[in-house]
Length: 421
Ligand code: 13P
Ligand code: SF4
Image (cartoon, rainbow, N blue to C red; front, side):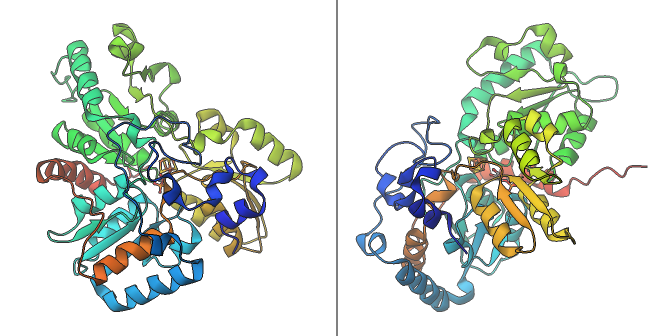
């Protein structure tokens, strides 16, 4: 399998930044998300930073790091469980006990009550979620603390509290004749734990890209409207699928009074969309889809719902990372797939299904800047520290925040799709 890093080393001109071929530790001392899709997003000053990785990991060869990870895992046995998101590089994925999307990994974290440590090869909000759902005493470890998510960072608790206060001043707090409150907060899994806690406290819920429709239906049963954060695209694509007209989905810009809408627009709104986006999925365009269709007649275009609505509309299908994986696996005839999601996952699908032609819609190799921060050097380091009896890079959600966040997460885990006639 050709890893994305090897691809970039071999052909730096086809990547969005040749610095991606370097070890991510080169960026640990530099503020910001580092090379890759989120390079130009502004990281908040509070974004966690990673301290220096010891030289013995930075200077080790790929083979040495692999051997050290395998040896540490053998020593630790079932005391440690490694979870890996689909967007992780292959050199990490091969060590994962569970590989999945953010929903599956949140569930997986609950199925290992005997493990002392859960090493989460993903990004910060996923590790926080695992900590909220883990058993007391289990340590959740993020191998590189700089592996945040630029989209998750686009909504913070102060701005959401402020938005909520303004919405209450417009709507009041009284339910309508059907008992539905004026507005229900829905946060995407890609958000900080304190935003999930906010939803827990205010009758709201969490969603992932694999259950966003079910969750929005849940919210519309209980509320007249939804405040959806931080991803405007997932919110818009999902609400559109449920029949909500675009005119009833104003955007909430936290820097403007009433988010930039009039009182009347907010009264008419069904879904208020936070002004957030994913810089990986923003790269996909309708032009790329047209190009793929012109070059490969009959191509099946599948994109992630974090892509802008025109891209989702132009694609044949849209779904979560697990949806994309299953769609490819279920194709019985050799098929050409153009996929609009993170490059590590697309390359892995291509390698696993040689009977199909599978390529990324974006011709430029530009991985998620923060998923890229998890390198085998960090995985070897956190595991060898555990062998030595030390827990490093633990992600801990304060107990009061965790209790409220758990309420919103459990509502999501319990939400069931509507049975349609
Ligand atoms: P999934 O929920 O599909 O795993 O997506 C997570 C993510 O970060 C997509 O950008
Ligand atoms: Fe965040 Fe986008 Fe990376 Fe997913 S792909 S972790 S949403 S920046």
